[in-house]
Image 1 (spheres, one colour):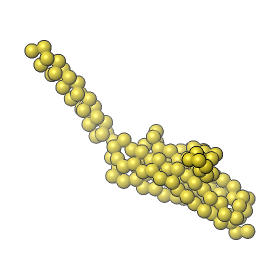
Image 2 (spheres, helix red, strand yellow; image 1 turned 120 degrees about the vertical axis):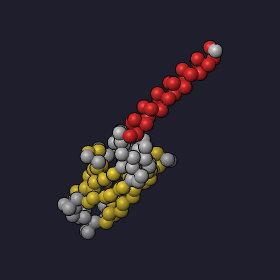
Image 3 (tube, helix red, strand yellow; image 1 turned 90 degrees about the vertical axis):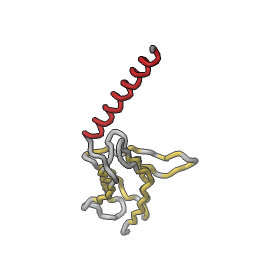
Length: 131
């Protein structure tokens, strides 16, 4: 009898936990996919020593768990000069100066969603200057 009462109490607690999860899921939109878009600034000139701006927009992500890290290269499996891109209104903005004939931009992407898809990868962009 004592074991049955303990088992019933355990099942009630489990049921309450499951109800909380269902309530949380019902209050959120569950994304079936993650959309990603790069937006280049209209002010980009593509000349040497010019400023270059890009915004990475993500739809279907959790802002508390998603991040983009810009880095220069990888040496011995370590990122050189890693920098977390700041997030603002669903976008992650990056600004740099085009100092070389060919400028490589490397960004690690980690987009997470508690109830939908996740997306991870590396974005690479090579930007050639005009002069």
